[in-house]
Image (cartoon, rainbow, N blue to C red; front, side):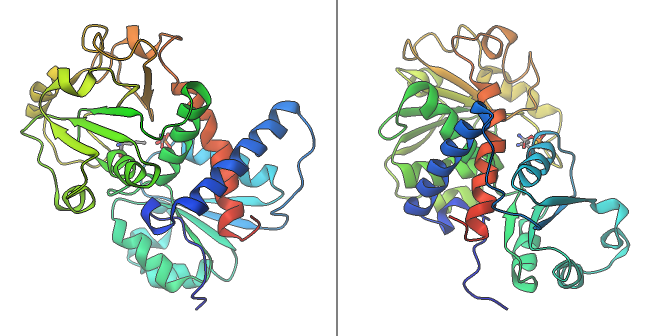
Length: 307
Ligand code: CP
Ligand code: NVA
């Protein structure tokens, strides 16, 4: 087992310097693609295994194009069509795939499985969303914010709604990149022990039910679906979330140049209205989605020590 391999599982495992290196490379890669200039095939002959236990549009397509444009190829496995679904262990699957593939991306309902893949494979492991976190998404989001509104450091960022996997990575990012994160959520949605652990004692992270306070002079408002894939929350909770909808009225007190972000897929009329998500002056959701491609190229290169 290689002990110095580079996994991309949670942002806080990696550290600011390396994350900035990835962001810098993503900006370069974006420029090259935009100019249509030819790209050095830094990952020629690399096979990327992607295992999906949950649906995906963005993650799947952006990783597949990313590895192709860098000269490698993707092998996409829907977990339900593999022997994992019939009881073959993660440990055995990891050791087998390791003989064919140089890097893995896993989307899982159980974060511990990522750690198991990490343990049994020599290949680096990338977290393509788990029940706990979504680090690739938040890297793409930071890039999108900075392209549109300048440095995120010291800015006021507001999260509205559910306390979920995407938020976990935003909290990690706030600790690393130094911005204030106001988290407005229904009191009926509890702060779980993982979120408590990474936010405890951090003055820049504020959980609140006071929406006005969370939005006041905010530079960026983020939300996500009220019900994550595989979440056990029932329909009763929708009633509690309603107040936390991002709409033209709720964002009135924000900074005049506020940005709106959402990792997508979005449910217009639930967590956000069409007047906000489709407002080109505010919403940068398409840049976030595009940046998945550029950031993930840089993450693939970083994991394979090309940067
Ligand atoms: N935001 C995101 O991860 O989208 P997909 O579920 O479509 O991959
Ligand atoms: N929180 C959402 C993100 C989807 C990309 C979910 O886990 O379903």
